Image (cartoon, rainbow, N blue to C red; front, side, top):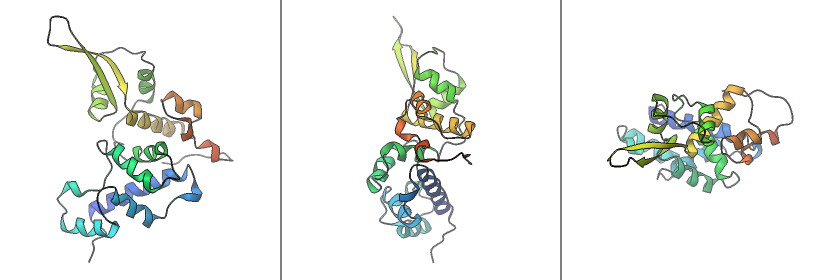
Length: 206
């Protein structure tokens, strides 16, 4: 009998639930059903459907390669595949929804990301920047030192994932959706603005 309480099954269902909830902010009328979303989700990881994933988890609980969890290394691939299943959402909306479901234990300084985007902060590698680099939230550019094999860091560049994480953190701190201008400050498209579909005052709860 399928074990619906398997830790991997629970983890995937939680991540899918968070993504569906986030997508409702863009269009509540077209959010796919939970069953449909679960089937399409696991297809992104090579499964035929949700029930096959559950059976696989029950038989191969120690094989991490079978986990249908989104993380920084497969973020772009899963976003592209998921958007092909749900074309009513654009790729930016899918990436926004996905990026809010992992690396939530990493503190992303939203103001730091914005300043890095404006290239106003030449600095040496700090523990904070090292952590952001480790998790793929920023990239670095280097140049060689004359007459030396060493290199120095010249620029820190927020990655696409880093910009999404910074914007989401800013939204949580403000307890409201970001405006089009605020999204652009993070290097994100204005079509991510959820205020267009809101007709009344509200508070976001996380």
